[in-house]
Each structure stands twice: as structure tokens, then as C-alpha cells.
Image (cartoon, rainbow, N blue to C red; front, top):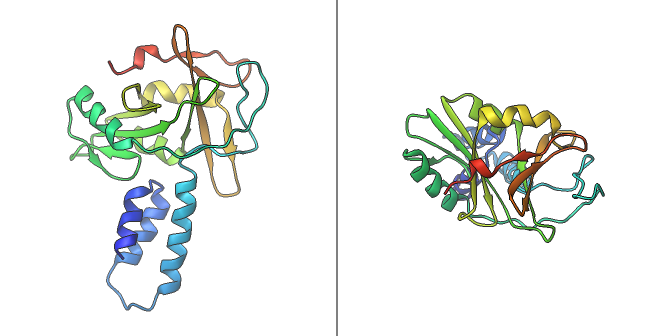
Length: 207
């Protein structure tokens, strides 16, 4: 049960969290199959924190499709600390990547990525995260680029119009958007599908 509590902190999918809540409700300790099922499904949720190979992969700056392999990185808490200072609010950790104010009127999804050899950072942004941010008075997507020292903080109202032009990965049970940020000579830009305008993210950098 301690492991279940730890897993609850590390995932953000509401469906998985609801299942963990159901398991933790006091009952007869004969539901081991249920607990095992939760552990396996939660492990799958954690795999989806970083973008994986899919049916709709981004191309590089030369237009060539590529499918890199990702090694998870984790500095979500450090990013949240910087966001707190920027927004002037206290943020409580709700899951591995989700933070909100005690009253729930401010919510932040912190996605992190290492810097890849091509000078880009890749993030996964999920529909349930979008719904969470849109359901608060002030929702933000925070992108930690390589470390918490290079942090982009974007209001969800600005992110939403960009989503239709982004690459996606879809499976039988889920989908997510690829947020592809490239570090260029004049700042950071969001790359989207071929033909879609690139977005200058430099104004959203946390100083």
C-alpha cells in the first residue's frame, strides 16, 4: 500500500488515480489481482511521460522524419519552485508533473526534457493535462529545457490554439501532442507540422 501511495504521486492520469483511490478504500484484503493490475497500468502511465515512437513523429529542421529514443529526466520539482517564485503563489505537488495552489485556482503542468544533439527539447502534453489547466482560473504549461534554469512558462490560453498544428502520437487507448522546442541563435521556437508557422517562445522564458 505504501507503494500504491508513491505511485499515485508519480502519475497524472485521472483514470489511474481514481483506480488507486478505489484500491485504498478500506475493504477486505483479498483483492490482490486488482492491486497487481494497478501497478502494471501505472507503470505504463510512467512510460508515457516522455514522447515515444508513434505513428505521427515530428521531423527535424530539414524535414526528415526521425524517431529518437528517450531517456527519462526528472527535475519537475525544481521547475515548480521557480514557477512559484514567478507567479507569487504556493504550489502543492499533485502528481509527478502536476502542481496547483492550495485553493486550486492556479494549476501548472511541468514537463521536462533533456537537450538532444540536434538542439531540440521534446515534451509530451496529454489531453487530461489540457483539461486540468483549462478548468482552473489560471492554468500554465511549464517546459523545463535541459534543467530548471531554462524554463518556459505559457498560459494555457496561448497553448490551446497551437495544438491543432502539432504532431501527435495515438494508440488504441491514448494520445498526446509532441511539443518540440528548438534552441536557435535568436531564442527558443516551437516547431510544428510542415507548413505550420513556428512560434517564438522566447517571450515566455522565466528570467
